[in-house]
Length: 298
Image (cartoon, rainbow, N blue to C red; front, top):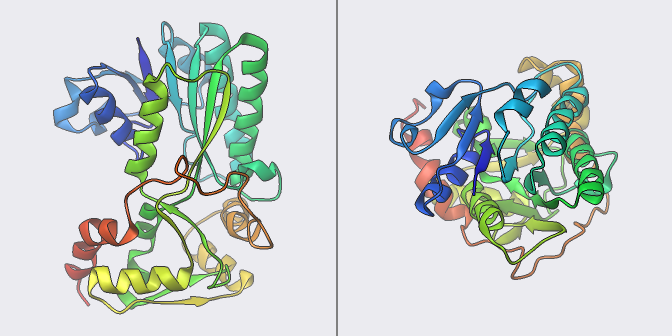
């Protein structure tokens, strides 16, 4: 069974790769720079240099593939949704042209809205495009509706060191938080398991729904540094994102991921044993975040 993995050095993809290798699979990994692969993994994979926005290159890179783990690449452009559409065209062409029989797509909670959730709308577009392919060609497709990544906190190290996170969501609004490694385990299981077929939506909600207030308490205990969280206005957040160097289009796409899920949103899939994964935020923060804050100058 030939399995291809995109974004194999990413927060989720690198764990998908190592899980497959441990299962005895030699995956084909698609990435712009094979030199970014960890030295220990290079001999265990077949690396192909490819830009996921290049539909011709993706089609060539996935010839002979039986199953594909697809992640839409991150975008920093002025029109993020247009970039998502380009990536979607690449995966649709690859699946159609090469007869790939199984696709596991890393989507996100909120994609079920289809419209009005900022950058998540790009994931929704990929979902619907893959669904259309699956319906016409009998492809098995699984959409992983993932919660908020623990690793998103690593993008706010300066704020964590200063002791205050700012968010636009209500501080008492719970949402799913998940470890990328848990997502990878679900993805690898679906790639390898013969027990399912057709279209499948698999939420990956992590171990618990957490409010931002609870997150601040967990981080304070896990890192040994006092961390607070405060709600800010949409306008103030826009200013902060622009000051961070984001284009206006990206600012709106990023902000929309919060504002679009703010008013009465309930995930399509409830929390059950199937959607709950084990890694707690406290354990992840202690292992991956604590030293990065402690080692930094105060």
